[in-house]
Amino acid sequence: MNVVNQSSSAQSTNKTNPEEYDLVILGGGTVSTLAAWSIASDGKRVAVIERRYIGGSCPNIACMPSKNIIQSANIVSYFRRSKEFGMRGDGDVTVDMSVIRDRKRRMVAGLNEMYLDLYKKTGAELIIASGRFVAPRTVEATLPDGTTRRLRGTNVIIGTGTHAALEAVPGLSEAQPLTHIEALELGEVPRHLLVLGGGYVGTELAQAMRRFGSKVSVIDRNARLVQREDEDVTEALQSLLENEGIDLILNAHVKRVSGKSGQSVTIVLDRNGVETAIEGSHLLVAAGRVPNTKDIGLDVAGVELTDRGYVKVNERLETTAPGVWAIGEVAGSPQFTHISADDSLIVRDNLVGGNRVTTGRQVPFCLFTDPELARVGLNEKEAQAQGIPYRLFKIPMEGVLRARAICETRGFMKALVEADSDRILGFTSFCADAGELIAVVQVAMIAGLPYTALREAVLTHPTFAEGLVPLFSSAPSMSKLMSADDRSAAATRSVA
Image (cartoon, rainbow, N blue to C red; front, top):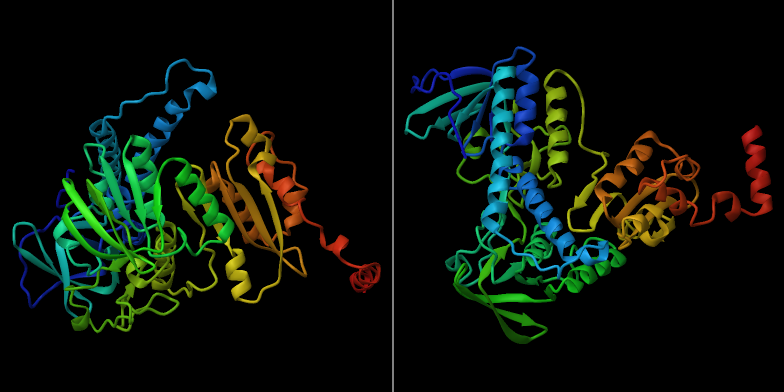
């Protein structure tokens, strides 16, 4: 990747006289760059200190590259299903991972160019360097050539993100396992990929590598994959992966690891008191994230951490140090780029006198398996835990005509509606294009529309969104649930 220093004055400066900026941002991820561009466009002097990746993790080693790789895997899946669509041949596919990797690299290079162009247009300064606090609101940047700069901001934003967690399991570190970063740079299909972790990263890459031709085993300590979701969701996801030939080893605790990833690696597991071993060629660790707060001088800056190691912030994303803010994953925000982007907007507005907060916002998400899993608002487990009564609306995707038309009838969609009103509490879809579909319901929720507005809407045929009509017609309306006396009383209250 072409990483350059965009600093216009990279020379060392007098350490007693730091360079003055309106805003200094430590960590140049997507959220940081959005804040930098926006504030610099208003004529403020802004500097972003980023150690390596132009635009941070999302466009370089996470969201965008993984979806690029997943798209290649989906194309392979269609080739293998070619007979279903009337194409001749045996469906055999030869995968060249180096070509897939190079396609991903070209996309990343294009994104880097786009980011650099926006830095130039907005006037924000990008400094490729390692940064750490050396005094309140003062950051020292160590450039690749060893020279340093000290920058002091009227305000400073911490946006250093997180990295993959590596548990203290005997032999795990010595095995040199892959994280998502190295997995997305593979130039060959693993013979047998062992995946530690059944969350978002683990399930997405497990399915992709299986479709490329790898034998895949997913190991998770929980009884279910993506265990925070409802049972019908996890059951559907587990069935999907098992049907594609992925071995799921659940309720398993890793005791020790031996060998080296990329050659041969063995994991010894404990399942209900029984010790077993599994051998593979590659090991991918996808078992959580750790905040990047170590060795960046937070104590010098007066910035406190939570008991989990994240930067401690209030609902305005202010840290315990005056003039210092934190955004994104390092601040403990939900680990989605779109939430981090909203964090940057909250801080931007608060810097100019606003009073925006993180509380009460919707947190939509999408797991980019095929089919996708997407949700916004409450699921049944959360509603039950909070004691919120609800009505359940649910239909299989076979009931959606678009799904039948394109032979993608796997999955279902369901919605929760408040028991004593028509307010939508949450929506979950496990289907093709689920990530696009939830946006329709989310907009309705933002607007405060009753579910009946979607039930009675005239939506384009045949689309997945059209399936919202039969979905919201799948349970009785409030009027049908109410007795005649209740309806009469309600009518009286309405007239009054």
